[in-house]
Image (tube, rainbow, N blue to C red; front, side, top):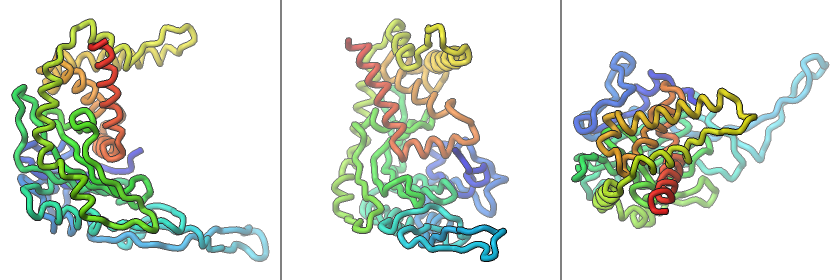
Length: 343
């Protein structure tokens, strides 16, 4: 699904607070152009504007070509007045095709403008920002400068994720999520009941209501306490080896039917084996083996670091967090765990 190259990631994804969380896995100085994309502290708003949001999305007419080059009249182009394209005004890449009612939400206004207002009187700062899908998707994350430590040794970085798109894949959304530092994974529903969220569609009558965003995100300043409490609750739930086996077999079933293809059985067995290895031996998961936190972290880590091709991981993980797929999977794991442990 990815069209992003390592060079794109090193120039169009900005990573802050590396002194706290370390470099991103895709860090490569030789691909970063004239300046690095990693920051030891917060990312300045002006840098996000200058490096990522220096262009605007603009509307362009859509034409349909009809006719035949072999005919006397040749081709004819007919404008589709009920359709429009959205393109970048710097390189004219086409980002999406829409009906007339679609409204553009410019990244600088809808993301940076909102972030500037929210961090105005707080200690939140920009921790990451980026472009995906050739600029069709964008996000800005604001977070506390310090990593949050829990009593069970599981470090987290709660943050507010602001995102929107020019390709029709995402509404403009603001939601609270959390990153597990030890494995660089996103945890959403699992640690915050889905997080506070405010969404605005790209419709003709869409309008920006700052107060409603602030109301929806009032939890940001207490998110750290909520996350710490949930991590410690999960770490206190014991999961026996028998229960762990049942959870794995439910989430990654191995079919025993006669007509199943051998390749499918082999893939399921390999997946189970890798997840079990993460749970028992991987330093990102093993410290919490035997607990509900370990179970959640094993499957979450597998989804983040093993599913799909490695060269698409940054885009895949970011996009899954933005669209809610990460949240849905985490909640599914917890639902299975609860059914098994508390049956």
